[in-house]
Image (tube, rainbow, N blue to C red):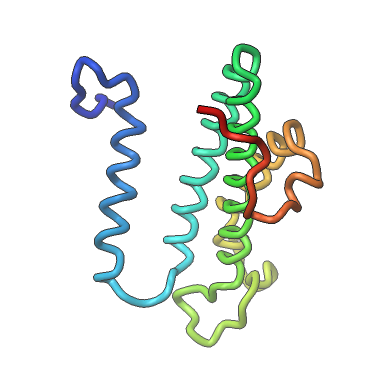
Length: 154
């Protein structure tokens, strides 16, 4: 895979391309209309988990030299996990597109010969749980999404 076109001063071309893709989707998604579907939520969950892993790596590298910045990154990592968990929960409450009369929640596995169709999002979520358990306490995960944990200094 070739990297997106960059300038000499740009050191993170894939992050810039991912951000541009999200901005483009945000400006055009209202044209499609309708509520979020499972595919949309699955892709959003994948993006949030990827961001979670990136912020986790940045926190690990930054904390020794700049503890305050590391704490801010740790807070961001926790908020990303909370967002991903909420999107995962929303995914399971959206009925499958092929069954308009489906009750919210998971499809009964007994009905599905090849297993449930949403295994990918659940596997991704469970894999991310290992990172979350390594770096985050239960109290941090359950903390409300508002507020700021450290003082900003300029």
